[in-house]
Structures are given as C-alpha cells and as structure tokens.
Length: 216
Length: 246
Ligand SMILES: Nc1ncnc2c1ncn2[C@@H]1O[C@H](COP(=O)(O)OP(=O)(O)OP(=O)(O)O)[C@@H](O)[C@H]1O
Ligand SMILES: [Mg+2]
Image: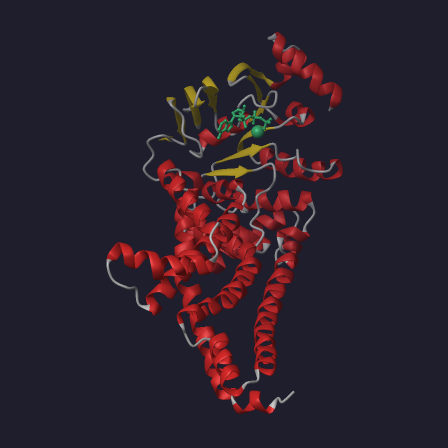
C-alpha cells in the first residue's frame, strides 16, 4: 500500500468532499420544506389533498434514487423535447426523492403530539396558531430530531448518486484519482473512511438529540 | 335571581350518524358546583367541550358568561374565562411548570412576564407545589401534575372551571390531594362543572348532580336527593354499580 497517493491528492479529495456536502446541504434545504408541505397535506382534512400527497409519497418511496435520476435524464427529455441539464436533473431527483422521506418523519412527529395538548392550549385562550407554534411544533421537532439527523446522513450518502451524471462529488473525484494513479484500493479505503467519519459525526449528533429528549 | 352563568339549551351533537349529545339542557348558576356522571361514552366529555367551544354542535345553543359560544367572535377571550382541567393533565412536557402556567397569560392575555410569574407562583403556592415551579412536568408525581394543571387554569383567573375526570388517571393515594384542592376552590365560591365518578366528592361538595346516559341528561337533582333516592332506574342502576366498585 502506498498512502502517499492519498496525501498527494488530498486537495482534490477535499474539493470532492466539499461538493458532496454542498449537494447534501442543498438537498436537505430544498427537500425538508417540501417534506413539511407533503406532511401537512397528508394530515389535511381535505380528502383529495391528503390522498394526493399519500399517493405521491407511496409511489416515490418504491423507487431507488438512481432510477428517479434516470427518469429525469432519459424519460423526461422524450416528453419535453430537450435534455435536462445535469445539475437540474440531480437537484430535482434529490428533492423529489428525499422530500418523501422527510415528509414521513415530519408527519409522525406532528402525530406524536397528543390531540388533547391542542385542546389544552386552546382552552387557555391561545389561538390555533399560537397553540401550533408554542405547544405542538416544539414537541414535534423534538420528537423528529433523531430521525431527521439520521435521514440527513442518508442524504449525504445518497449524494453519491450525482456521480452518475459526472458530478464531481467525493466518490467521483476519488474514482478519477484512482484511475489516473492506478491506486484504487488506497483511494477507496480513504474515501470509505471519509464517509464513515462524516456519518459517525451525524449519528453522534442524533444520539445527543435522543438523550436530550429522553431527559426532558 | 341572576341569569345562569352557563345555559345549555337543547344541544344536539352528531358525529356522522352517531348522536353524542341528544337535546341536552342544563343551567348552572354562579358559585354552583355541578357533578356530571354517567357510564362511559354517555357524552360527559363532549358536553364539557361544548361549553368552551372545543366541540361544535348542530342544534341548540350554549351561552356561557353572557356569550353565545357557537357565534362568539372571540373564542380565545371567552375561553380565558373558562378554566379546563383534563384527565391526563395535559401539561406541556417541553416547558417547566412555571412556563406552563405563564404561557397563556403572556401570549393570550398580554401580561408582562414578571406579572404573569408572580400570579403563577401565587397559584402554585395555593395548590401546594411552589417548590416544583422550575421542574419539568415529567418529574412530578401524578397528583402534583394535576395540581399544576389546575393552577395553570386558575392563573387566567377564570369565572368558572371545567374538570373532566381529574382524578381518574391518578393512583389512589394522590386522588385525595387533588380533591382537596378542588374542595378549597368550591369553598371559595368558584363555579365548577366536574365530570367525576368520585361519589364521595359529589356528596360532600356538589350542589347538584347531573346523570347522563347515551348522550342525554336523564336526571338532574340536588346532590343529597340524588344519592338518597335517584328517580330514574338507570341512575339507580348506575349508582349501585359505581358505589359497589368505587
Ligand atoms: N371525534 C369523534 N368522532 C366520533 N365519535 C366520537 C368522537 N368523540 C367522541 N365520540 C363518541 O361520542 C360518545 C361520547 O363520548 P364522550 O367522550 O363524551 O363520552 P364520556 O361520557 O366522556 O365517556 P368516558 O367516561 O369514557 O370519558 C362516545 O361514544 C364516543 O365514542
Ligand atoms: Mg370522557
């Protein structure tokens, strides 16, 4: 083994990691709000709205992320008549795919707050909005945090899918370096270590939320 | 005689085909303590929730403290005058006891924090748990939690109080302390509507007993009369059952 090759290319790997983290942050920032909307839609009393959101969630959940990306790259151009830019395809795939998972987490978080808590808030003269804001949402967010953090790790790992369209995220960078230097073993071990460390940091964070919650 | 503080007139409430309240009428006068009892599913909770507009009914009218609940433009303001206590306390687990008490006074009533806290501490002292103010509800015993919930309702200085089975979720040794707080309230002249199966409390504290069955008020009688000789067979059967197990 020759670890020098990893050190020599560390700046390229770092750039790959940065791109991966950017993709992850973007995917979370874009799909979490959409997930909230989907969750609220599913909990809505309007039957058609909740049915629509539920169907969307169930259809999307049955597809692997790569397949969603393939749709955008191969199928959608047939429909709209020109190719979808890579960045757009990756972005849309991430939002469509991950918002579904976020919506399930948000939905169960909101549902975990007892209905009588709302009655309690209203009975003291708080408005519906105040009851949501001060009573339901803080409890829902606390209930969601561990699952949300775990899902963020999944998003980070899922960001490797951008590789398919040649996006320079971490895995793509390291595979290019591996090809150029003829040292795939060292590079993939190093890459695995980086993914491991980032994921570990994430799950430690999730664990912290978990213990905080059980103490409260 | 002054007008009743609560007037319920022929209220009908349906959930789909199911009639939860079947032409219920009830007058409660200021300072009265009313105990509502009846079998499970008879509509006791539903009736209480109609009184502060948590439930919407299809027919009849409810007038509380001079306001028609169904057409009230400012329900939050009306609800502040109606304290409510729940079977499972419903304290907010993410806030300290003190924050539980001051949330509505600050956000709904617009009191300055210091003023709200002073008031809250005053009521926590009255229910005997001032020393628990800084704790989270989860760390309190059931009896302490229910007393905190009562204090939370009182901090809004309501004109009347609604209790929905306030002791049913408590271990026997904690029932006493909660009933004691309720008795003190009654002695101070608070108007109270109490859903409970604590017949000792009803006999000792209630002015009148309302017996409900299958969504209807079957019998309303002064407490002593109700316990001495319930008029309807259903009330008689119910009393027999509950006094034997209770
Ligand atoms: N949201 C709802 N939808 C449909 N039915 C309901 C709803 N809420 C209550 N009910 C029904 O209305 C009836 C009266 O309920 P309610 O909770 O008022 O009874 P209760 O007298 O308080 O009983 P318990 O002693 O068990 O608390 C019950 O049969 C209940 O199943
Ligand atoms: Mg009930």
